Every structure is written in C-alpha cells, then in structure tokens.
Image (cartoon, rainbow, N blue to C red; front, side, top):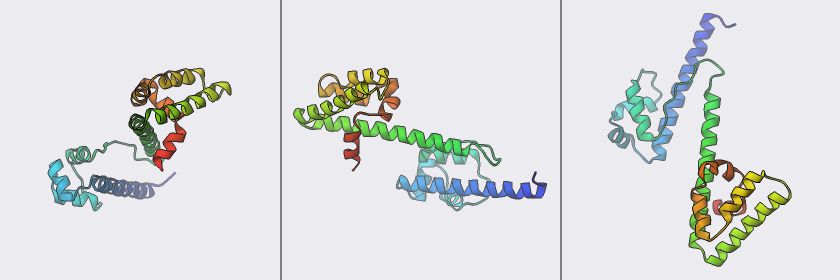
Length: 192
C-alpha cells in the first residue's frame, strides 16, 4: 500500500503523462490534417495561443468545451478514463487499434472493388475465379465455417459488377468476412 505522499506523486505523474499524451495526440492529429495552429484556430473557434499551450503540454486547466471543439475539428474522440494505475486506457487503445484495422480491411476491399470494375472483364473473371477457388478449398478442407463459405460464394457469384458491389456492401457480416478474405492475394498486391 502506498502512503499518501507517494500516491500524490504517482497521481501527479499520471496526470502529467496524460497531459503529455493529450498534447501529442492533438499535435499529431493537427499535422495529419495539414493544419497550422492558426488554421485549427479558425476551424475550431479556439484561439491559437490556447492551442499552442495545449500542444506545449501546459498543465493549465482547459475548459471541456475548448477541448471538445478541438477534438471535433481534429476528428478525435474525447474520452474519460479512470486515473488509477491499470486504467482502461490499454483496453481503449486495443479497441481503437481493432477499429482501425477493420476500417483498413474495408478500404482495401473497396479499392479492390474499384480495380475489378476498371480492369478488363477477362482479368476480373480470372481474379474472381481465384477467389472462388480459395473458398472451395476452405470448404473442402473445412478451414472455415459453412456460414462464411456460403456468404462468400454468394458474394463471388455473378458478374463482376455484383462482386464489386458485394465488396462495397457486405452487410452486417462485412467485418467478420473481411477478416478472413479469399481476396488476400489481391489485397497484398494492392498494398505493395
């Protein structure tokens, strides 16, 4: 058990770390959006001086409304997490990482849909056939559940326009289906 003085020092360190995290998150988000501090000030309605103080890691108290306006302008989410050691922060980070991975898989499949529509019918047919063969192997070797196999079979059936549309709107199963995709060979090539 920590004595009161040690607890205070630990909480102060955690507070400073969170302020530093907030400052670096906001600065990184602003830079990703190619905004100057003045540009962010114009978008958010928060003064450039206040933005500089936040990004500088100032331990000054900032109003919730100020932070909220900045987060909205930067596309960030403001969240409250427990202060104690072992907080929910690792779980929040893991959830955010998983959300980003799901979004990346959806984007890659959407880019593949566009490529299918842009290439010749023969090239598209060959790619679809390769994906269909993988699904056939999954079924034959029992590598995936029949639910996945049947859904992928429906998505890969028909004209390339249908296949492309199914990659753009795979319904409520999209995240699960895209996690194990018969298109992995084409998605890797697109990423390179």
